[in-house]
Image 1 (cartoon, one colour):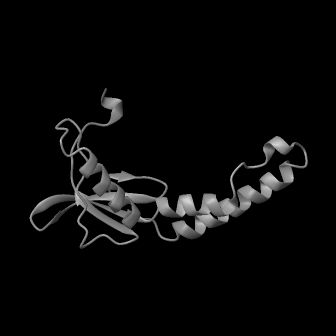
Image 2 (cartoon, helix red, strand yellow; image 1 turned 180 degrees about the horizontal axis):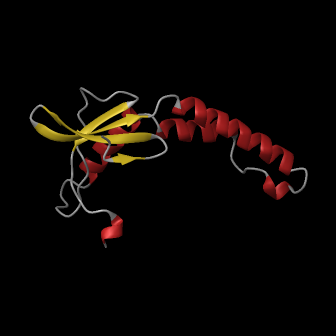
Image 3 (cartoon, helix red, strand yellow; image 1 turned 180 degrees about the vertical axis):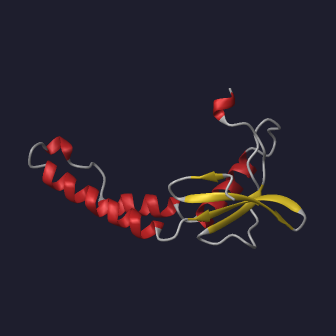
Length: 122
């Protein structure tokens, strides 16, 4: 049973090599849905720009596709987690999960589990 779910993935709690981990699994075909939605968004923006040029999207379609595609690639997220952990290694008040590089692929990220309270708790 997932412990969290979003538009891109679900997160599960598991054990790996004797450690409690979080396993983030991308929903099937998310990449195709994102591409479809971007194509539709730019088409509608193109039509709306005839009403007002201000309705045109100020970034290129290619740029937006690259940005969103990077966000659903969990190997990219793993690299960012490694950067954050390096940047904050001397700060005892900030924690980021440690990714397991040997099990992380584009659609699955395995990382140490860090418990906490939801924002609504506060």
